[in-house]
Structures are given as C-alpha cells and as structure tokens.
Length: 275
Image (cartoon, rainbow, N blue to C red; front, top):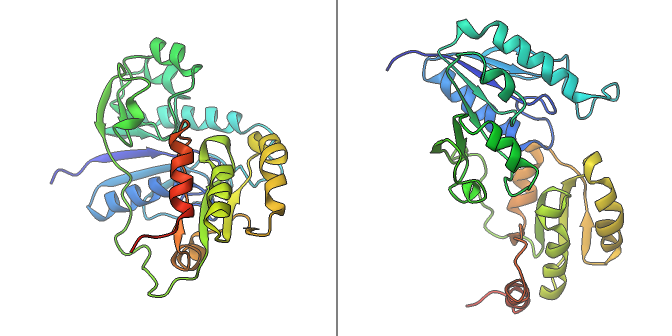
C-alpha cells in the first residue's frame, strides 16, 4: 500500500474526538486514527485539546463551543484555513470537514483536496453558493444527502464508519425510549416526545442546545418537557452512551414525515411491539 501524506481538517467547535456532543469531530477522529493505523502520515488540523496519534496542528488552544472567551468562532476557522494552505505542499491530499468555508481558497490554489459535507443540503441559501463553486470535489455521507443538489461534483458516498465494538447490547433493557442528539427543528425531538406519549412509554432525552437553536428550544421544546413521561438529562459524553442507549427499549430519531404518514407512524408506535 502506498504511504500517503494526508491532512484532515476538522471544525474547531469541538475537540477531536469530542468530549461531549460532536458528530463530525467524532467521525474525523475515527478516520484519522484508522489512517494512522494503516501507516499513512496524517496531520490533523483541529483544536488544541484534541487527542490523536496523528501530528496535531492546533487551530485554537481549545474547542470553541464551550469556550466562554470565544465570541466569533469564524475568525479562528479563517486562520485555520490559512495555516492549512501555508503547509499545503507537505500533503498529497487535504481532506476538509469544515463545510464550504475553504472554497474560495481551494478554487485558487492547485492542491489535491476533497470535502466531506456532513450536514443537510436542503437549505435554499446553499444553492447559489454551490452553483458558484460547482467544481469542488465532494464526498457525501449518504446517497440521499445528495438529492437536493445532485448536480454537484460528487466523487463518492462514504458512510460514517464506527468501530464494531463501540457499543454492546443489554439483554434486559428498561422500559423507556431514548432520544440522543441536538435540539433543533430537523432532529424531531418534538415528534419523539409525541411518539413516546402515544406509546405510553417514558422518554429520556440526552441532547445539547446550541445558541442558534435557543429560541426554538425555549418556544417549542421547553414547554413539552413538563410532561410526566419526559426526562431531559441534557448533554452526555461518549462514556455515558453505552448505558444510556443500551438500557433503552428503543432509540427515537423521527423523520419529519409529511402528514398523513407521520401520524400513521405515531399510531403504529402507540400500538406497541408486534409479536
């Protein structure tokens, strides 16, 4: 196998791996450590509190989301991008995980690169941006993710890989449901609460609330948390997930189905498991 010099460029909001919530940064960690294990020369651009066997280049001293001194996280990301391209000749390929922030630079500098888009693409504001930067080589995390923008320069779909032994089941789970993730409109926590209520089962919610979603939390979700079947435990870390998920009867991560399909799903859940 040819040994490659690879740069992994992670967001600075969470450490790699994250100490609490953090989907993209956790996947970047798994990918980085596996590439190192395979013998590649990997440089990880991430926050200074990241832990890795790769060479770490810190874009900031510590992850930004929980740093009370950070007012403008975008400023740190622009400095990070500049540092990546200052060292660009050291790499055979640069793998970006910071959405589209680097597009103006990568279009102008001949550096082999690919960008994995980890988020949703059904936002109308993204259409003019991606039309402008239509040639950027991209990787999707599912084929369905591409549907809103199928005309982009997709190179491959690479599903998120997780260690096979990351979590194990529990023979006799408790009689509650679980919601794990982030409080935001697209995650469907309000629907999960409705499903649990109609099913007659308690729901434990382990979720973070970002500043951007604070109004949604206050107006839509917080009033629902007073219901007796809902237990909001807040944000949890990786070490707590085994017990949280393993003890649950099922994990709820509802899709925002259009009616009448959403109501059919809820009614089916309310009927309980089938024998």
